[in-house]
Image (cartoon, rainbow over all chains, first blue to last red; front, side):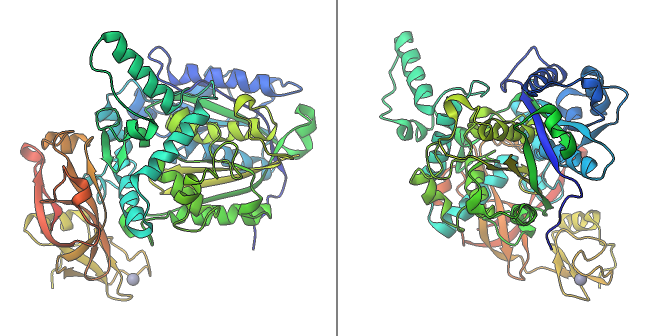
Length: 420
Length: 137
Ligand SMILES: [Zn+2]
């Protein structure tokens, strides 16, 4: 039987920092940026002293910044003390799980106005230390000990996917090209440029230096060049992987009775699902994440909608293969067909099923604990038709979905939003 | 029958002795590799050690250019990739392990479904050095 909330819950404000690599900013300062933007997004304003609780997604504050017990520290920086500040840890799903916890705390009747979000500062560690920190989210006794990195886990799904369905590395590249095109239209994106722009800028740089000028014909040609797009974990190359990022995002979640005090254009959380699965080798399939199938089913049942009703989605494309697997797991496409949909352009900004209009984690950036909240910020802009150049051109926009994965699928958090 | 406790430490000891041992639930027959002190399928604690045949096939893999510190210290890098993946064992369960002896610098030559046989690999320096599960084509 579908579970329902005892009380309606809606988002009335959303904000994010720019995502990128910021040597001079820590996660607190980035969260303050996101908070200020969130406050400004509340149409009728708010006194921050009315916020009653804060759920803060933080996967690895100790590893990235040497800071533990981060939630009350963040609450202090946001001027929210002495309200309850609770840290939520579900690896890269921490941000969206924090939003879900805020939703539950309101539905329970305990609170009416709750802040939720996440922040991460990754860029001050070396690539090897970031690799180690992310690898710690796999099972250290069975996956990490086998030499798995984070990209390795998804790359393994990619080789299984290619063998089972006949996809080729070019299909992964098409996901990256599509997401970079969207990210080029997003001023908050870490890579605010298409792969074609990146290729052309490398050509101009080479011309400026007077050395050998690369002869890439097009984006695909560029992506096939081992020098320009080296292997990270085959078949995942550099442009198949989300970058190392710093950033923060947060939303204000309120009880339905209070919604009109803040805005006439809220996003109701009408469906929410959360599920878990074990290490890669213990899963039923290697080309699908069961937690995502279970969580999306829960969310669709709760919302009373079907995958075909969803008009715009942000899915967890930490690697390009992850977007294909996500599209199938959330029921947008049958198993083994998502790569064909991408090839046909169905998920482009102007396609029938736009996915990751923000540029996704690939292009927008992936500050891990902020990413899930960042997806909700994008759906906020899209459903309110405030997404500017990257606004999806769909009439009567009403329903959006976020799909946020923790680790390599150990957690999947799905939320469905309706603009009312 | 071996009376060692059903712990990862026991599993690692077996590996150091050159044995690939799986935990099998005496009640429901499920394998758990590495072992758990309780069957996570039926909650039974009636468990047994079974020496695995070590035969399997490759179900998923990757050739890694940017590895963890442990693998970098073993000499793997962008010029010297290592292969790791998911192996489906003859007895049914799957396990993740490094694939030794695959042409890791030529990943497209590696085929899903390739028969594999268990092997062992030592990694780590000094006191940290220990035996890990691995497979060979
Ligand atoms: Zn059992």
